[in-house]
Image 1: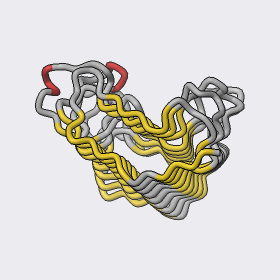
Image 2: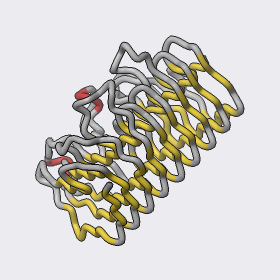
Image 3: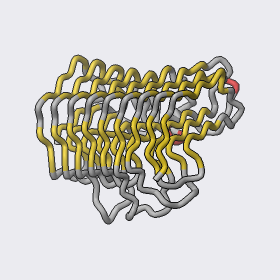
Image 4: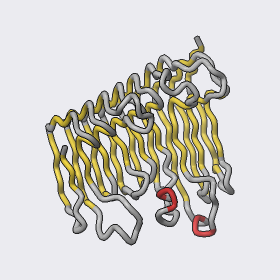
Length: 273
């Protein structure tokens, strides 16, 4: 579809009201991928708004090394190939990149073969007011390991906000062993000296998880993991979870030498059916 991937980078990019479908990779792609030595510059101040990216082989919208990207009011649906479990993202940030200052707001990411919204690494991320309905594996997955699968050194995470999203009707027929509907995992279980002064604020507030389709107990509706961060201030509150059966409603994992400082968990509503 639309593919912006120059070594010299670019700035002040607006992609608006575009329909992209039927492409072998992504409908819209911005930014290079690869380790530090391969990437000269990043794309700055990127806006993708009001686009309809559907029925693409891997993803609707894909982005890599960007600094300041605003994804808003897009519809990303039916992406991925059912015979390939590694495909199917509504919108995704590349695992071998380090996008900074990411805003993902008011999007519809539905019926994708793998995940609605996916981000493997980044700094300062806001995911709010999105609807992720009927995705096969996970509605929203912020893994945020920031190690690029080993292609570059660990990087700080900044502030992460996941708020007022609706995740519903998880399909699990293609991934019967998959465990999570909603994932916010920060770190990579590998604590290093360079992370000693890292401080991250993680907020998971006001989200709704409806018609959670899992029936096996090895499961969690919300997982917040804070690995390889010196200090994480965690706020999980005012979420509504409609769930059938699972091992844990909310899991807070501070392994890897991290400290979850003053974790707040309050006013969550849980409906078991």
